[in-house]
Image 1 (cartoon, rainbow, N blue to C red):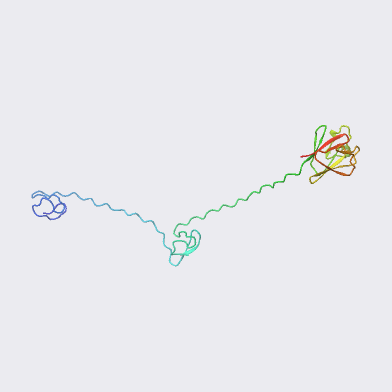
Image 2 (image 1 turned 30 degrees about the vertical axis):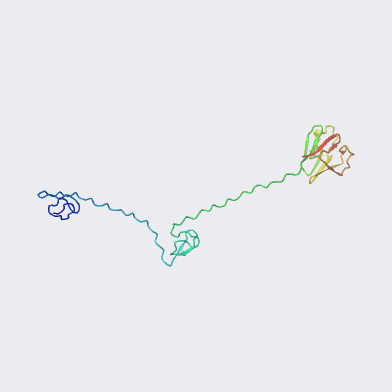
Length: 217
C-alpha cells in the first residue's frame, strides 16, 4: 500500500507508513490528499560592491597623497605608504598669508621738559625749543620773543630781547643779551652779556625787577 503522504510502498494491511509514520487509508476509503508543501524561501544574494578595475600590468599608478609614481601592481605607495586604491583626497587649501601690520615705532621718552615760573603770579613759560629768547614784545619794532614776558612785567624793567635760554642735550644755559636792567642768577652778581651760564633745577633768575624759578620736570 502506497503512503499518500510520502509515496513509500508499505505492506498491505499496515495502519501507518513505515517511512513517515502517516496513517495509511483503510480499504474502501479514498486517500486524503496531503496539503501542498510550501516551497522553501529563496535566498537573496546582495549585490557585491563594485571593485575598481585593476590597472594594466607593467604601467604606473600615481599616489593620490604624494604623487609618487608606483608600479601598477602595488596596493600601497612605496614612498608614503598611502593606499593606492583609496579615492584621492582633494588637495588642502592653503590660505594666503595675511600681511602683518607693523606696529608704529615706539618713541623714546623725550628729554626732560624745563620751564620758567614767574614767582609772583606762578605763571609758567615752557621751554620747548633748543634756543628761546625771553623779553617784551614790541609790534612797532616787529619784536616778538619766544617767551613773551610783557604781562608779568608791569613796570617795563624787562628789555625787548632780554636773555636767551639754550638747551644742549640735557643741559640748559642762560645768556644775557645786553639787557638794560641786567640778569641775575640766584641773587648773585649781574651776568655779563654774551656769557653763557649753566642752569640747574630750582635756580632763580631775576630779569629787572621780575623773578623766575627754573624747573625741570
